[in-house]
Image (cartoon, rainbow over all chains, first blue to last red):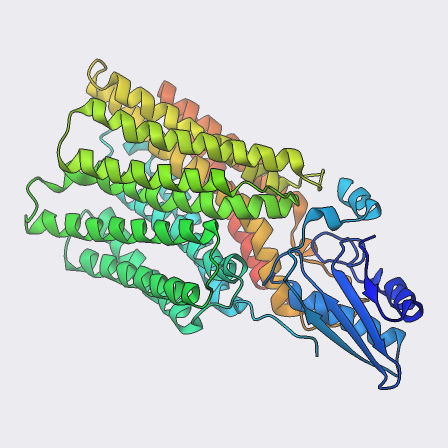
Length: 108
Length: 424
């Protein structure tokens, strides 16, 4: 799995578990296995979750759907928190980020 | 709401797809209807009509539509203007029938000129949209330069075409219009279609295969060799240099094609996605089909002085057929079922923010029908090419009918997708 940076590993682990259910609609692989999620930070006092992610292609027509689903998944996991998802293309996504589980799905 | 990236609204892209599908169907119908006339010279009303409907109504409309969707992906910023995109569609959609119908009637009159002018303005609208979109992005990668150069070649092709039309009724050029046909055809085929397919294909094919090819150097080589070869071709043609001079630009273009084919082969080998679906297979086949017309053109150049006029004409017709109905059409048909589902899906489902949403772009494609349609098309294509070569009339009739059935299926599949509505 692509290393996700976080200030709260406990919350992050819960979020990751839920984000395995968010699939890229074209590839059928989860955003976690694709290595799209880069950072999950939690501000417990303010009850906010910040998620920084990327897409396989900037301006991908499916991008909006994927980010919407990530936000929804985080919101479902932490109903008392507000989730903010931001896109970041500073480091370009490459297929190297795909996990072994993701590769085996694409292999089928 | 999460931060979103504006991509081109489907409403401005789908009309291009719908128009292109109808154009392919009509072209295949015209091909079937024209079989008895195929043994004559290539400069005849039906062939002129078919070639222009294929090049403009089918190939160019589909590419313009897909380009409006792809520009943000290639550039990393939004399309400059949706209004210009729609203007481009309306102008071309109105201009193409005028031009094609007048060609079919062999009337190079003011209506044909008006139709051609409409298409020129459509391309200018696209060109402005492209330039303005590019201005917003300081970092431009190689693919976008391919698109820009290809659009310039398309504009030159159309301007020359308009001049040739005008020259029929009001001679203004040193020679008659027939003399300039090969210049008009080849800057359009190599400058517009081939250059654009190489530029966009080198981005899209690795993207769909999930392959990382870090070889921009090869793409720049292709870009430079292609454009230099095209400029040299124009130079050789305009200066009426001896035939052997044509070998140099021809070799340059073939060299570029081989570099491109090798680039795609490299992407194929590096791909993470091992299983390849039918549309992608057809797109990969089209890369190979790209080389077939080059062999025929080489034969035409080699046999120019020794073979009979009828044999050369026959080879030229086969060359044109394999370019439009073979390479270009197989590529576009394949890519339709890779790009259109995304566009339709994003129209209906991108706002549906639920992890329990089970409809995916791939679910919008009727895979079995697509498979049979492609099988029919390729069978018809091969039978037609063989029958042309061996001059078997019944083979041509049968092949054209098979391709027409494939065209009906293709159009039906495209319209099924465009008309898709989410279940209530």
